Structure formats: C-alpha cells, structure tokens
Length: 249
View (cartoon, rainbow, N blue to C red):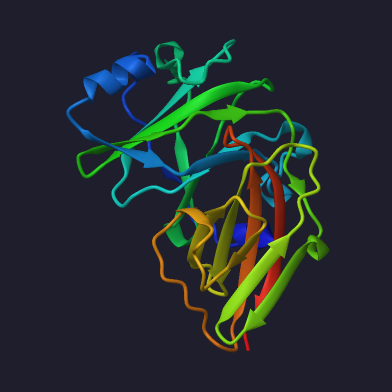
C-alpha cells in the first residue's frame, strides 16, 4: 500500500468469467441457497505512484479486500446516478472488462483496478468460495486521492514483544474507522485490524472492531516490521495513509 505494502506484489491472476446480466438483487436471489459471508473491503485512488507508471493523471481506483482460499467467480456491480447504496435492484453487472486480481502480502490481500470514468459511484463486489457467496458492503468510488501523511503523525512505542501505535488524522475527509496492517521483513502480513480509535496495541484487542485476518499477534524480539494505517470513510473509501518502519528489542 505504500512502498512497503507494494514491494511484495506478485504476478497477476486473471479471473475472467462468463458474462452475466442479472442485477445484484437478482444475482443474490439466484444464489439464495448458498450461505452468505461478508467481505472486508475498501477502495482508494493513488495509494502509491509506483503502481501507476502511466502517470498520476490517469490513476484508476483500486479495490482492496480479503479473499478466502479458493475464491473464484468474482463479480463486480455498479450503481450509477443514484445515492441509494442498498438499492440492490439498481446495481448492474459490469462485463466489459475482466477482473484481474493482484495478490499482495503473499496473498493475504487481494486487489484489482477499475477502468472507470472519473465520477463518483457505488460498487459492490462478490465472489464464491467453498459453496459460500461472499458479498461486500457498498463502496463509494470518489474522485479524491488518498492523502499520504508524514511519518511524524504516527508514534510507535515498543516494549518487550508488543508495540503501541498512535496516530493523528489531519485529512479534510471524515474517516470513521482505521485499518492497521503489519507485515514483517519478508512481506508476510501478520496482522490486520480495524479500530475506531486512533490507537492500537498489538497485545490488546479490546478496541478492535474487526479483523482483516485471524491472528494472535506476537512480535519477535530484535526484528524489523512495517505498519500501515489507513483511514477509511463510512462508505469504504480510503482517505488517509501513514506508514512507518519499526523495530522490536
């Protein structure tokens, strides 16, 4: 997600499926016999310019999410010219380009870019895994780019095998939740947590509202780690990113 996040991207995997014409409500009805699960997801624009060699003038929104093992049959729906994000009958399937999944953090995070006009709209993504249908909450694609905060806004205190992170959010947009992604020096994601507070301690999950991945986080002594904190709006659009290297003792 920063240069730390994205150094570990690996080869693209195409997930192109047969075109379908059902709107989102009809698609959910057609698959009503399947157990349904949620997708932890957010989208952003211009997380890191290294991903966009075409230049910052043509940066596409990118969706980031956690996909279960053996995930397939990815679908993408758009809601145009409406501000009713849960009007699923009005979400139309987009089949004009394939969904190309890029695994990050050794596969713990999945992403794909959206070739789209530079206008705001709601989208929903779905996929299937192990006879279960996963559906995201509505994501509002916006026009503003993510704001990369300076490292001094993120304070890190380490003690034994734990670390406490505290940050400031000086973005103009309203962020309602914060995602903390911690990876080690090999690029492996070892923790992904959500808080509404602007603080998180690795050994304390009392203020964690959700987890991007299941983990009992224990940091190794004398080791190097990377932390990325992402500020996300109630519509799952990321507005803030601050990242930093830290070391345990």
